[in-house]
Length: 431
Image (tube, rainbow, N blue to C red):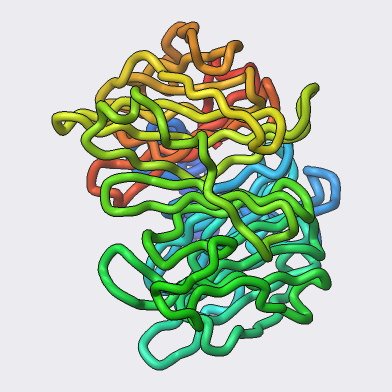
């Protein structure tokens, strides 16, 4: 009897030992094999698009090891650098704007998106639909959709909260410009006829608490519009103020462009007698100007750059107008090399008037003489590999002679990649 009980309990003990061994051995096996099965992160990024690391607002300012982090996969459509370390980037997912800010060179991001109840249809363009004067103060425009009014969203705390307001009967907002967190301008347009539009300019000096109408061409008969008003002919391309008084607006007409300048804060405007009037431009079938770009205060005054595209025989070549004295005099420069837009080519951009960057067929160039000559950098291996998947260059911006960002996308515009350079465009890496 005792021997049979001993054999029974011995068998039970052996069985329990085997069960425990089976339970403890499987997790150890998984821990050993899991890292080998995971694909390399760099390969996944190139194949699948943009992955960014999000931190919660509560832990964003803590030490890196104390931040609460998680990764998301997103489709970015635009960005804007505010400084070397700080920038915003955004896209639209299911009609909801997804807006992110980084203050550590793109290593981590904070989601500062407004409520998803405010729906968007088209992608937002910087200077037209969204503007940030610094990391705390920003504006977003949701133009009217069907019967809904145009909505203005404003933040004064870095996107923690967004205040909604509207400008009744403004039509479509076509451009914005701010010289400080308090002072800015909004240009609105109304439907009129092909090649013409009604234009109204609003100004605020108290962060949008009050918007004053300071210029309009809607209440005049077509034959009696004053010469001090931007006419109905043509459509607004871009608006830039360099200080509270001086501003520039580019207008696109059927085949040509015009520049209007104000020197009293936007109340009176005058067409430039120098810009877009050149024998070199007369050879173009069509001339398309971009938005004026304020490059800052240089040694001779305030610098502004206007990109120009010359279309001739279905071929585009690039030029640029430059001023160092707020538009009193201008210099037209023709940029050599055109390249293929489908193979990593973009119009030149400038950080300062003598500090420009461009891409031609996947190669980054740098200019130190207002774009007259360009020096190529050796091909960046990582950038070249990414351009193979994302050949369209959406945007290039430098916020210092060293730090720049670049957004590239697939030909079907369904996926994108944000790249950065910390050595003046010589080498690039993913963000």
